[in-house]
Length: 224
Image 1 (cartoon, rainbow, N blue to C red):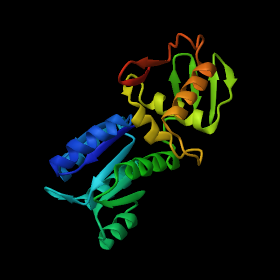
Image 2 (spheres, one colour):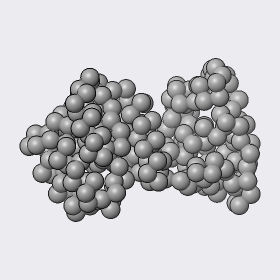
Image 3 (spheres, one colour):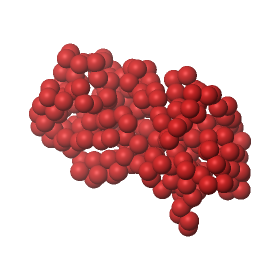
Image 4 (spheres, one colour):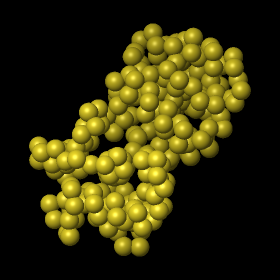
């Protein structure tokens, strides 16, 4: 699980963004100001993988925090900027920021940017496990007890969604949102049922009594 430090002084954004990122499988800690951010990074830089940094902070600004991060750590930084604020974007990039996204932002775009930066910086979690299934996201392969399993693009994406949300109940609507365009084809509710069945046949020891991807009646599915 990748760990994110959110540096933001808007309490409502902190609350909403923290919940969303946690649902996407990230660990999130937040601080509200420049001083607290610098103290946290000085003490716990080794415990985080990426910093989401707002430009405007209650006791300073994100530029000073970014400069300090880049001078003393190898942590990637994504700036959160006011929409159309070209000065902040340019300044942030000049200070070494790895990316930026303007407010108001689309949460899924932010997640995509986070994952992209983590991959570029070599901090993305590269191995995921579900039961006796091992997913090497760097190599794009899946094994069961050491034997490789061959999945279609959509089956692989579906497995990643379950692996990144282990222990959480995922509704069919949520799953459809995650995979609908991964293979460049339309995925409807009936198709989802087919793909879950196919995935179970490949990863479960007994597909009729699944131990990895379980059906939670009336709610959806949960991976254990």
